Length: 93
Image (cartoon, rainbow, N blue to C red; front, side):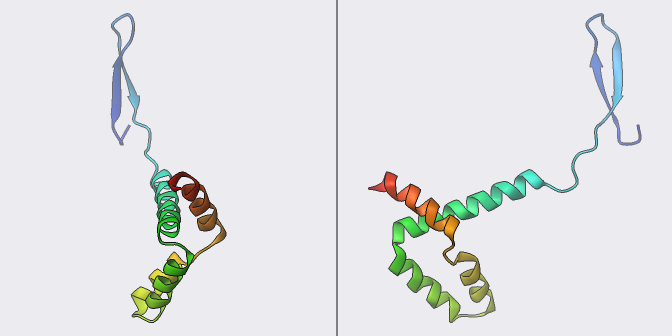
């Protein structure tokens, strides 16, 4: 019970103290949601800009500093991004 206790009142008025459950140390759900949001963002950009403009902007990033080159690597078109862009494109047109 060193992490603390959670108290609750039973149906007959008895107060019950239980040890607090340990919270997960690594936010797996948050990281998965961030990855999904990142791919959705890439797909939206690809659907909005089109293949040619998106490719030109990635090429511009590849000529930049190390941080811009890392961004270009992360933003490159992959099959999942193309699929998401196709799904978004059907709703935009």
